[in-house]
Image 1 (cartoon, rainbow, N blue to C red):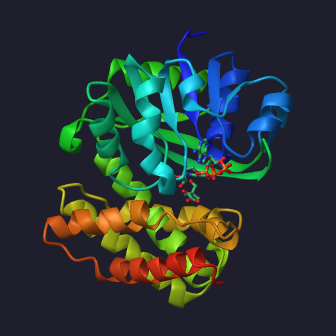
Image 2 (tube, rainbow, N blue to C red):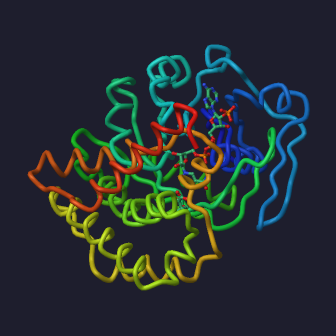
Amino acid sequence: MSDRTYAILGTGALGGFYGARLQKAGLDVHFLLKSDYEQVNKYGLVVESKDGDFTLPKVHAYNDVEKMPRCDVVVVALKTTQNHLLPKMLPSVVKDDGVVLVLQNGLGVEEEVAEIVGNVTVSGGLCFLCSNKVGLGHIHHLDYGQIVLSEYTPNYQPAGITEMMQQIANDFESAEISIELAEDLLLARWKKLVWNIPYNGLSVILNARTDELMAYSYTRQLVEQLMYEVAAGAKSYGRIISDRFIQTMLDYTVKMKPYRPSMKIDYDEHRPLEVEAIFGKPLQKAQAKGVNLVQISCLYHQLKFLDARGKEGGC
Ligand SMILES: NC(=O)C1=CN([C@@H]2O[C@H](COP(=O)(O)OP(=O)(O)OC[C@H]3O[C@@H](n4cnc5c(N)ncnc54)[C@H](OP(=O)(O)O)[C@@H]3O)[C@@H](O)[C@H]2O)C=CC1
Ligand SMILES: CC(C)(CO)C(=O)C(=O)O
């Protein structure tokens, strides 16, 4: 068992699930919480999972990042809508020779984190996980769980497979979380957007689950067109996403249990939407290369409207 210490910033559906699994495997994990703090501090975490339910009656819980010990690996598991808090959170919790591991959806967060933490190593993980927080300190893991892990270097130059990535992968594998190591974080992030952009966006705008989007040729076509636009965005950075990959994502979604993507759940729960990280940033990045992603831009504007209206208390 490794003696690496982990900090989980944001003990929700994703952070709560992976953090609990790491602790269950014997690692030393420290959880930052907000509204769940009192409950989790007293009673720990409950994980209902398709791989087996478990409870951790005692966890290291904190409601203030300043009270947390400096850790070797700091997992960013807040919603990206809370990332304005990172400049305050990260410097006090990550060791000088530690790693910040961004497990959020979207594009460009590692760049922002690297600006904050200077010489500390930054990595990104793409999580193929279906998990929800269903109550205070109560996580419901519905499906999947694999992480594609990759290290960040300035301007997202491919970093190769580093020793540090291998060590973190070993920790997650000891917690029975499947890990794939990727040499090129930027390619991995664009590939994840091939799924997130069409399904997160359309599920909110059309009030539909993934199975409904795939059941009608109208929406299936739209999904596919959006996937090809994401591939065009990736290509503007020299990253090639093959037709075969797109086909695999379509087939994978058809086989998935009917699912409400994370953005749809946020919308239904009247929470802020991760529009900027998932739509705004990729659009901005492609535009910087002279590529206009017209259909994604159309989704972006509609989602911004729904998000803004939600914040004003509309329906
Ligand atoms: N859930 C999933 O299956 C997947 C999620 N992702 C990505 O992972 C990221 C996290 O999503 P998810 O776990 O679903 O979101 P959740 O909302 O379930 O979890 C975020 C957690 O952060 C907590 N939090 C917010 N602000 C603070 C704060 N100031 N201090 C301490 N804790 C805070 C929230 O607490 P509170 O509720 O009290 O605000 C919440 O428990 C997102 O980028 C998402 O897109 C990616 C793949 C799959
Ligand atoms: C692909 C999926 C469903 C889980 O990994 C996701 O990222 C989301 O719901 O936003």
